[in-house]
Image (cartoon, one colour):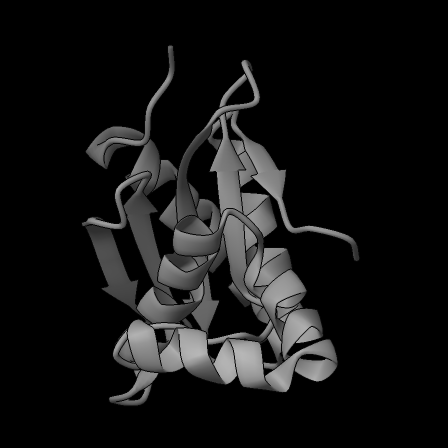
Length: 145
């Protein structure tokens, strides 16, 4: 069974940054977490602002913790704001419910972690995450787009 590790995390980050350059995005930060929410790798493009690592980790952490993309968590925030507010409190602020946190699945459809990207518009962040995940031969689960 394929798991997220340093090697495929590097592939994900490089592909996400390549997509960033192709799209001429603002400087991005990419965080990769395993299925237990532990950080495997985090890289920042030059010029990425100081809160971006926390935001990228929060997007990925929320996705892993709740088993759904940060985009779907954002939809939940609109429909059930008290619930997401409570989750954010329980998560001690480590949950960012906007697009850019994408679950990573293996070929058996098991969640093996998540990628969080922050720095540009949330939809662009998400696209860069998806591109990176696919480049590593894994399945990107961004929820209902």
